[in-house]
Image 1: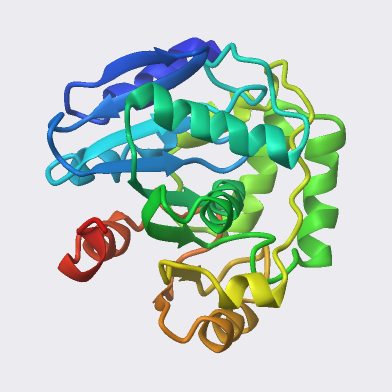
Image 2: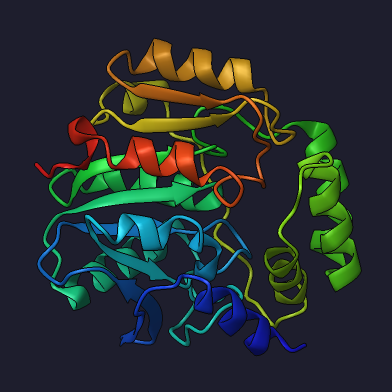
Amino acid sequence: MTFEDAYDALLDRWGVPVERLDIGGTHVNACGPLDAPPLVLLAGHGATSPVWFTVAPRLAETHRVYAPDLPGDAGRSTATPPRQVDDLMAWLTGVLDGLKVDQTALCGHSYGAWTALTFALRNLDKVGRLALVDPTDCFTGLRIPYIARALPSLLRPSRERTRSFLRWETQGLPVDEQWLELAALAAEQPTAPFVRPKRPTDDQLRSLQPAPLVFVAARSKSHDANRLTQRVTTLIPAATVVRVETATHHSLPVLHSDEVVNALTASEWSGQG
C-alpha cells in the first residue's frame, strides 16, 4: 500500500461527505454544514489530518469541521513549509482567512496542541474556544525516555521504526491497523524540518483567554500526566481538564473518541464567543 492509498483509506472512514479544499497550497479536509460553527482540528506531527477519523464525523453533526495538513509535514499540502514560529502563525492565519473564518473553535493534539495554544496566545480575537489534546511543550516538557525512544525514528525515519515506536507508546492497547499503517508510511514521506516548539511562559499561560479544555492521557509516555494536570489547574484555574485514564499520548484521539467528542460538544464549550 502506498502513502496515498493509506491516506484515502483512513479518510474514507470519516463516513461523511468530505470536501477536499486547497487554501493557498494547504490541503484541508472539511465536513459538516456550511452554516454550522467552525472548528479547526490540528493533528500532531506526522499524523496527517485523516487521523481525526473517529472524531471529525461526529463533530460534523454540530460544527463545520476543517482539518488541514501542515505544509512540510506528511500529507497533501504543497505550500511553503514554515521555518519559524512567525511563519507557522502566519500560515494558520492565512488558512482561516482563506476559509473566511473570522473566529473559530480550535483543537489540536500533541504538536497540533502547541500550535493551537501558540496561535491563541497571539490571536485572542480569532479563537472562540480552545481545546488541547494531551498537549506537548505547552505546560511541561517531554520526558527524556520518550525522547530517547523516539530519536531513532526521527533521525532515520522508517516504516518499521515508527510502527515499533507507536506500539511501544500505546502499551498494548488495541491499535487501529489502518491508522498505524498511515503513520508508518508517513514517516517515509519527504518532509521539511518542523518548527521547534517554544514553551509559553507562566505569565503567558495565566493570561490565556479563553480558558482551554485540556485532555490529559493518564498513561502518556510523552510527559508526566499528574504534573501536566497540576500545571494546567494551577496556572489556569478556569480551565476544564478531562483525564482519560486508559489513554496514552498516541492513542488519543483515535481510541478515545467518546471522551473527546462528548467534551468538545458540551454546551459550555461548543458555543462561540
